[in-house]
Image (cartoon, rainbow, N blue to C red; front, side, top):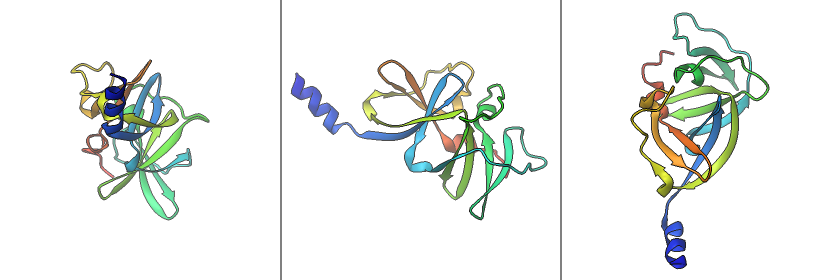
Amino acid sequence: MEKELEQNVLTDELLQLVGFKIGDEEFAVDILSVQEIIKMIMMTKVPNTPDYVKGVINLRGRIIPVIDLRRRLGLKEKEADQDSRIIVVEIGENTIGFIVDEVSEVLRIPQSIIEPPPSMVGDVNANFITAVAKLENRLLILLDLEKILENVKE
């Protein structure tokens, strides 16, 4: 039995994720999408953009739009503080920053603990969720960055 369990762990594909918090909820995205994580910096507002687009930043000569992930997920807005971060991700041809409350950790989790999201997921728009990971004493919501970027005007 022990060997069988060990074999399952060895053959189970590991996912590497960047974990972060928005309010009391824990989220994660695939580490391969993440270019870097930076502290909050000055943003330039862009007229006629949705309320969740906070503006653009100049990151080493590249102009990158920044989205408040709280607002995009339909959660109440919160002022940025010393723990707030911008996760810079690359999705297809787009490089975009997401403001999160706090980046918590890099996780390596087995694919076997991932389940499809439940049909009702509280305050967060269920369309943006790809899966839920059941960790020992908590749940981790895996986000679909491509869906979050749908209909975003730069």
